[in-house]
Amino acid sequence: MNRRDRELLSRQMRRFQPSPNPVALMTLILAGAFLVGMIAGSILFTSQQPVQTASTDGRTALAFLLNGTRSEPR
Image: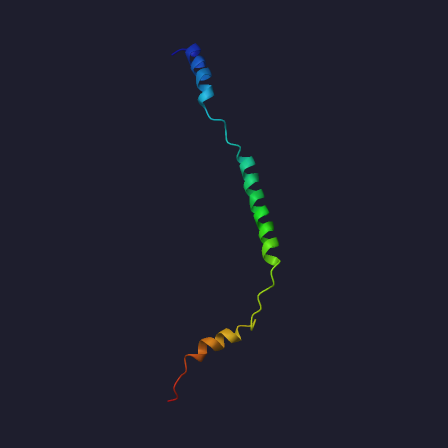
């Protein structure tokens, strides 16, 4: 195979090679979709009333847990 044959083959195969993927564009689209999802989620879920808890320091949960395990006096 000489130089002319290689050039001819490369010209013929050029149309079969896929174009390079635009990695930067795909990254921008992915980051944009993530940000739009975060903004939409914050708008949708912060409009609801906050959940009220009985205790914020954990004493209620601890009392509920320890209430069922009574130790017998010895």
